[in-house]
Image (cartoon, rainbow, N blue to C red; front, top):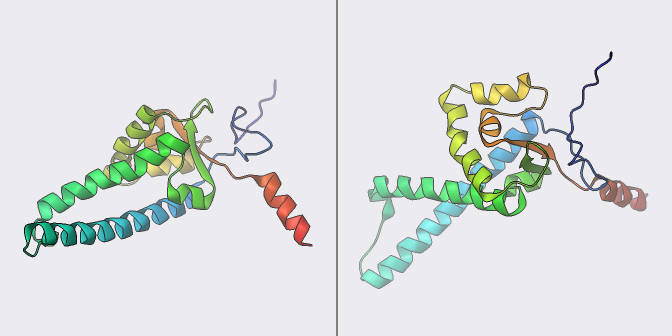
Length: 171
């Protein structure tokens, strides 16, 4: 009896999707893009809110003096930023840039509940001194702790056939 090892989801694998489980480097790069985007958008949005409140209240408003509220708003912003696009399309901005997609462990599309559960479980990987992320290297299906908790996995999801055709048409 022979066993075969696969690194893709059969139900996700199609002519339009690569379907292989994403590795730690691509996932870390996507997360870095997301962190930079979160910080940039939060800073811009905060300045806009300060300006609007300054006009409405007719006095200078500076959120940097109320760190408790700023941190609370940042946490809410991070949860919304990560959960909403995952639930809607299975990918955050960073994941889209790197060609990654979150799906359920069985290959079906991720829903709002599983997206939220994955985002809420994400800090556990940090709190356990990175062990949750180490699972990406140790497991054949490259699922991190938050993926195991939310029954999700991250796969490469770009249109490989279209990319090859575009490349061939240039030569």
